[in-house]
Amino acid sequence: MSEVKLKDALDALKSTGVRITPQRHAILEYMIHSTTHPTADDIYRALEKTFPNMSVATVYNNLRVFRKAGLVKELTYGDSSSRFDFVTNDHYHIICNDCGKIVDFHYPGLDEVEHLASHVTGFQVDYHRLEIYGTCQGCLGKTAKAQ
Amino acid sequence: MSEVKLKDALDALKSTGVRITPQRHAILEYMIHSTTHPTADDIYRALEKTFPNMSVATVYNNLRVFRKAGLVKELTYGDSSSRFDFVTNDHYHIICNDCGKIVDFHYPGLDEVEHLASHVTGFQVDYHRLEIYGTCQGCLGKTAKAQ
DNA sequence: TACACTGTTTGTAACGATTACAATGTAAGA
DNA sequence: TCTTACATTGTAATCGTTACAAACAGTGTA
Image 1 (cartoon, helix red, strand yellow):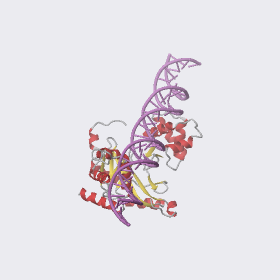
Image 2: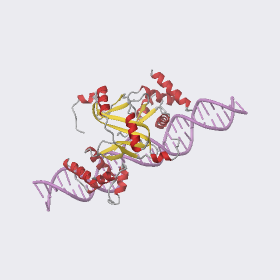
Image 3: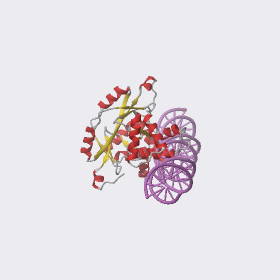
Image 4: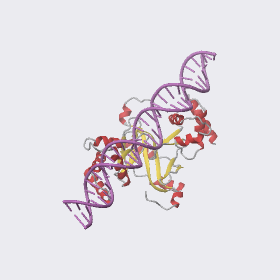
């Protein structure tokens, strides 16, 4: 099924006049198969073996291309570096404050909040972003530690 | 009323054994009166006149102190730099994609989402974060421009 | 009052993520 | 094949943030 996602993504790119290069193919493929919301550097290091000459700049360039095409979302958390997430269906993230793990979960959507916000502020609403923070089961097992 | 907020904040700090310095007083005061969700640099430049010798490091140090004391929230958006928000009541932000303006709005809370997320993922939930993106009325007035 | 202790500020250097830029490479069309 | 436009690469530069060491208070105690 991820083959379908990849094909769809490539088609979407092609239709906007973006050239499909081996690097772009590889980055997209990696992001689709990844479950870990990788940073640009994660992607770079993962593909280093296959593309020994690839530059970090290429990763950043293409992540921007994908973002503009709506294929990829950039997640800016407190960490120093952004994480990137292949856009599939509407889903939200829950993030472990202890180990940083990010898990997806689905929720019907928050149209009501958007409507209220639009009504109160006069904004024209495009989209929203929601994250939940807590502690994952793995870290709950260990003894708590003061931050 | 912002006097009360300031006093409360100072009391809260004092009670946790944090010393109240003129710089800390000024930073807190600025944040409470500010409506613009300033960056560390905004704060630094605003207080430069009053404290010609103040260091950027002091601003960062104290924002971290305030954050740990729960007085201030750090907002990491796509921009390069973090923005800081004095914590009052529960409110959310709606952000203009065009001019970057951030407006607060209130909403009853999203306990239900937290519960569902906790149930599905097994996380122990601490808090969440929600932002809505769109275009503010001012920017709607101008003609739209492709990104 | 003098002293020691602890937390604070300051200045600067260092770090690390991201971007800009110029040079080189490559695909597609005429 | 030639041309043109887009891609990649490598590197230097930028910029927000932090680390660190030195100078500075404020507070309590003798």
